[in-house]
Structures are given as C-alpha cells and as structure tokens.
Length: 586
Ligand code: ATP
Image (cartoon, rainbow, N blue to C red; front, top):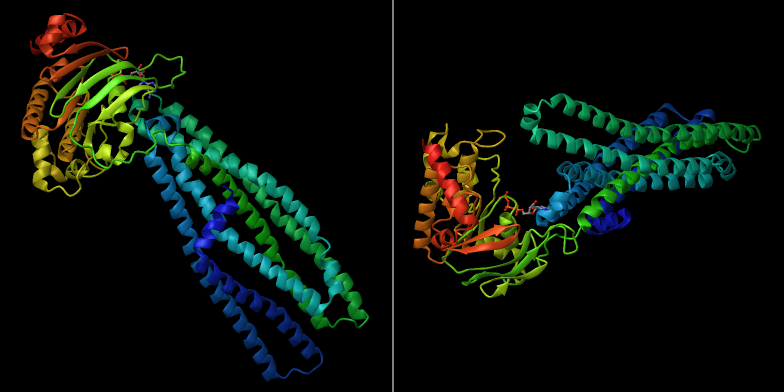
C-alpha cells in the first residue's frame, strides 16, 4: 500500500477532525492576507495625510486583532489535528502488534527483535508525522500560497507578480532534486537506527554471557561503531534537509530584488502607490511559509514513505501458521499422529527431517513419555501438536478432527505447555502463575503452586506470593522458574498438558513429588492427558506409553517394563542414569 492510500483511507475515517482543522486553517489564511492589505492602506492614507490619530489607533487595534485570531486558530487546529494523527500511530501499532502476536516461531527465527521494536516506534512515528504535520502543512502552505498569489496578482499588480515569481520554478526544481536524496537518506537512517536498537536489545539480554566471556569491551566498541553509523546516516539526511532553507532564501532574495526593481519603476511612473508596493513586499514575505512548508512536507513525506517501505513488508509476511480452522472447541477423544514427517527447512530441504514417519496415539487420561537423545525431535513433536510446526507429510488429529480444522484459540485453550525455557514476566509471582487464568483466586493459585512443589519456596521470598520477579524483582533459580511455569500450566486446567523437559532443573526428589501430584490430578480429572518429554527417564517411568525418538524416528515404544525388556537404547540409558543417580547419592 502506498503512503498516499494509507493516509487517504485514514483521513476518510477521521474526516471530521481534518475538515474542522481545514476550516480553521482557511480562517488563518484569510487573516494572514488581510494584514498586508491593511498595512498598505494605512501607509497610503498616511502619505496622503488622510489618517487621523483615532483612525490610526483603530487600524493598529484591527491588526492586533488579526494577529490574535491567527494565534488562537493555529493553536486550535494543531490540537485538533494531532489528536487525529496520533490515532494513526495507535492503529498502525495495534495492527503490527496483532500481526506479530499471530506469527509463529519460524517468523521470530528470521526477524531480529531490535528491528521489530524500531518498526513499532521510529518507523511508525515517521508515518504518523506524514499523516499529521505533513498533511496539514501541505494544506496550510498551499492555501496560503494560493491566497497570497491571488491577492498579489489580482489585488496589487499582475505584472509585478509575474516578474517576482520568476525564481520560484527554479526553486521547485531544486526541491525535487533534494527530496529524492532525502528519501534514500531517511531509509538508510531508519535502517541504521534499527541495527543499533538490535545491538542494544541483544547485548542487554545477553549481558551476563558477555561479562562472563569478558566481551563487554568488544560489545561497547561495536555499539560505538553502530551509533556512529546511525549518527552519520541521520547527518546525511539532515544535510539534505538543510539544503531546503538556502534554496528558499535564494529564491526570495531574487524575488525581492526583482520586486524592488520593477516595483520602483512602476512607482516612478505613478502606476503603483508606495503603500501597494509595501503590501506586495509583505506578501512576498508571506510566501516564506508556503516555501518552507513545501520543504518540510517533502521531508516528512519521504521519511513516512521510508518508514512505510520498512513496515509494509512486515505486515505482509504470511503467517507462519494460518488460522483457518472453524471448530471452536476440542471435544473428548484421542490425539493421533499418523506417519508425521516434518523438516524445518521445508519438504525440499537437504537437511534431515526433524521427525520422520512418527505415529502414536494418546487416549484421554493417558500419559505419554517422550524420550531420546538431544536433538532427537522431542520438542519438534510438541511443536507439531501446538501447531507451531505443520507436518509436510502425515496427519495429526484430535478427537476425530484434523488439528488444522480447529481454531488456534480452541487448541490453545485445550493445551497447557511448559517449554524448556520458561519465561516469567516482570510481575509478582502470583500474577505470573495467574497468567493462565487471570480470574483465579489466591487459594487456587496457592493450590497450583503446591502441586508444582514451589509453594514452600515462595513463602520464603521477601513478600511471599507478592514478590516481584524479573527485571524489577528477584531472580528465580532455573528450577524455581520451571516450577512456577508448571504451576501456571496446572492452574489453566487444560485437557492436554505438554511438559518439554520442564523438570530438567529440579532435583529428582522434587521431580518425584511433582509427578505424584500430576498423577493425583489425573485421578481427579480422568479425561486429562499429558505428554512428558524428558532427558531423564525417571520422569516417564509411570507413563502409560513411552516412545523413544532417535534422529526423528520412533525406534522403541512400550511401557517402562517393556522397554527395559527390549534391552535397547532405553534400557542402557536407564542403567546409566541409575548408576549416575547412585553415584550422586554417595
Ligand atoms: P533437546 O532434548 O536437546 O531439546 P530435542 O529432542 O527436543 O532436543 P528438537 O529441538 O526437536 O530436539 O530438534 C530436533 C532437530 O531439529 C535437531 O536436529 C535441531 O537441530 C533441529 N531444529 C530444532 N529447532 C529448529 C529450528 N527452529 N530450525 C531448524 N532446525 C531446528
């Protein structure tokens, strides 16, 4: 979409604000052109000795009144207009946010966070300015230009106007040349700012790693270089912007010279009064604003176009996971994976698929254990169930319907997922747990925390459940974070619980307690199913069915006892982990 169409559509929706601003601007333009006319008339009356003290005072009062009216109208239109233009910023930011929220992990793998943040701030600011400041400055400038030119030609002397305006076409040519360079320079400045933003975001997120590796100096140097490049790009844009002013100055000086020359000649020949020449010179001065406005508008429009050129592709990137399903609720029934194959790079990629021909069935109330060496495809399988990844071959169905037939919200409402790296927001512990069910009572939150074996730890924090965590609060250990995330998922009370190595950072004693609590919960709600992906086999021994994934394929399947009897990877891993645990206990 072009900037003109975007702004056009916005203006149509907010036409009342724009129309009232335009009416006020017409008022400003009328008052503005009346002033030189009044001054010219006063001078001519003075020169002809026809102006008494009383008339002079009235004339001055009228001029002051016009000045005051211009002031009030200008303040009013600006307030009216900006409150409308800021809405465009809100609309665009909401659209961008909604799009970002709907994108899947594949999108975020390709995009840089700092870039997205720059789009939501700097680039949208640029578009907002084009819709507000630029649009009205363009209207104001054009209106003033037309009225001043009209009064110069029709109200004073058309010959003088024709000569005085000769330098302006040249100025227009210079404006066109400058604006094309501004477009490139502004695009570059926005891009450099994005890169700088990205570096800050990444360095702050990884500040501990940088410190541990002693890389602060290198990171600071990189920051300095990026900041320098961003400043240089902005400076280049500013240099081109600065070229507008001298062009206006040159054109006006030339016009004033021509006015005095030709105007003086006309006065000598008694074809023009001194008052009319004064009015004309004042009108010429009034052309400064439309000229500046033209330069300012071109700069803002080029900046807005550069911003939109960066924003639009982001809004147009197809959703990595389409939400085209129509079924609103997941019913009772088994979850079935039938011959599922998935490769991250797509079906034609040369990479080995992360999952190959995986088939498994999980009935309501059952627990499936998912084990295998690192990189075997455990997380990928869970991503397929979460519809973060769409299989290239095979079928996934739940309660008799393909996953794609459900609305994403329906699937999300039926599934609780605790990822390997659980994220806690900058809020209190209670708020973090209640995220899954904002209306939950304190008692329910505490119950969920007890189930996740984190309740006692929370009571030891300075403010208990009201202790803030994250950037502005305390930092939880990896195991505590995992258990808060588990509490959050249990509070949600969904039909399917997915734990992706979510017990890896807790000791085996706590792991056993949590697993016992989960078993209790399932007894209370027999239709609840769970999938536990884990490195540690102790997390899955109670599962109704266990599959072993290796290189994306199911190599072994059965209960704990059956797998031990098979004497394959599972049995040897079990013996190894048992030995490790007994050595740890010594
Ligand atoms: P771990 O136990 O170490 O978490 P995992 O069994 O969960 O491993 P996955 O994370 O599912 O394994 O990874 C399976 C394969 O897919 C690996 O070879 C991995 O490198 C690859 N992979 C995982 N995520 C991506 C991704 N986003 N893009 C490309 N390849 C990926």
